[in-house]
Image 1 (cartoon, one colour):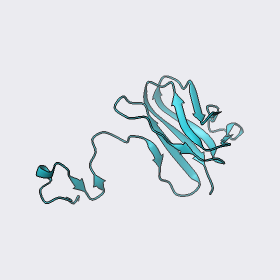
Image 2 (cartoon, helix red, strand yellow):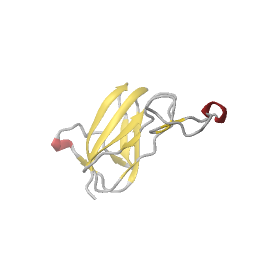
Image 3 (cartoon, rainbow, N blue to C red):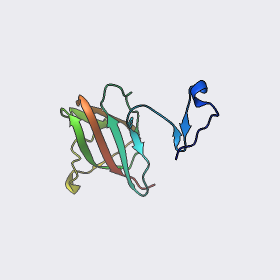
Image 4 (cartoon, rainbow, N blue to C red):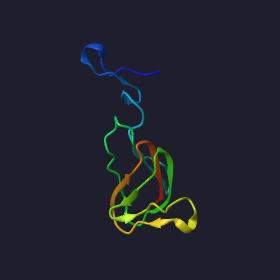
Length: 120
């Protein structure tokens, strides 16, 4: 059961529940908090979402780009390094050489999930 943060949420214009402020729409994208070395970044290509600025650290190993999108990826990079070959096969893992912004271009709708391993 949710809890209100305001005595009169209808007059304050902001309603909160137990898990934080309510938001309209689905997951907007960004890094998903995971336990351990395996990490995921979600990039949403729907028109109502802002571009996600996610950084992938140097030394991370990109293992796979999972496709839930319409169209095809024309470019997938971390900084200037191409990561589009990462398809889940060990032979195609890509080690990120420098910290950089994740950029994916091409899809017109849907979501891409970039999976990577990073040990601090």
